[in-house]
Image 1 (cartoon, rainbow, N blue to C red):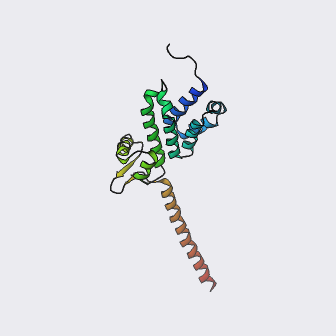
Image 2 (cartoon, helix red, strand yellow):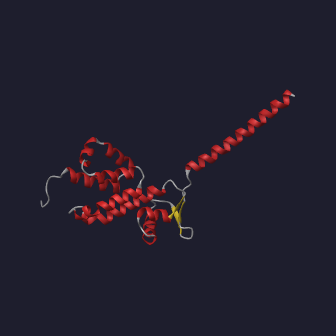
Image 3 (cartoon, rainbow, N blue to C red):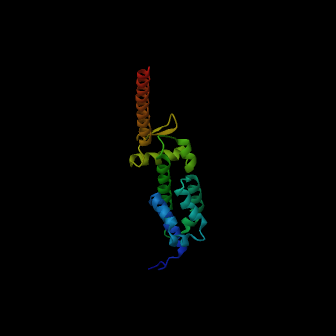
Length: 184
């Protein structure tokens, strides 16, 4: 067995942070950050802590900036080094999906700025996400935006509440008018 049989806390922190960021949902990352044992692994690794915290707080620009700062260390790692380009792609794709999810329309410029990818680099990534159905949208190059194919359920709920409120007000106005007419 040509590799050391023990892992240092530093190695555990590095591997688990990067691999969790690439593959785990935000809830898992939050619970990881709250785990007292894991916190001891992160001790002395402020970049790793910033990496995970910024993602869970939806500060994707800081997440990618921090990841970029870790790239030299990741490339030097004998086990992670060969996988860094793929891990970086996975993290960028995951961030794009998370960033776009709450919007019905999102500018390509904002995604490009956040990810540090040029629009030429961004379009194949978006195409891949759409083909895999990770995001359901159309790319409109003329308007420089992504347009969601999914109707926001909160928008539908707001519209329904507005309609119910309108019906209630009309009914209340009718009742007030009838009472006023009876009192005359």
